Image 1: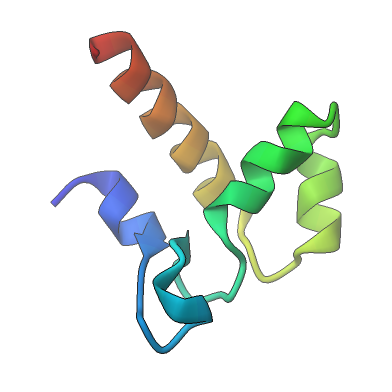
Image 2: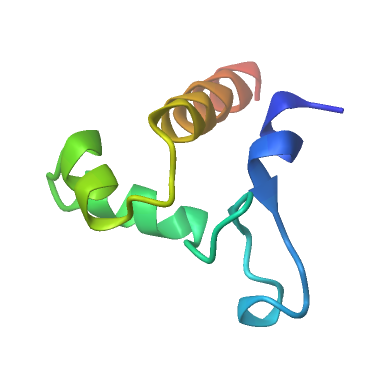
Length: 70
């Protein structure tokens, strides 16, 4: 099991299976949208307090590793 799989959950009963941060209804795409728009992780976390900082940071680190390994 990868670390990301413990951070990201996809459940057909939650937002139609959209990948979300585990334990929340916050799509992971939202974090990438915030960053793409020039916002900081802190701004994202302020708007979505159900997401823990550790989740957001780990998702970004795992994404970076996956992209560099490709």
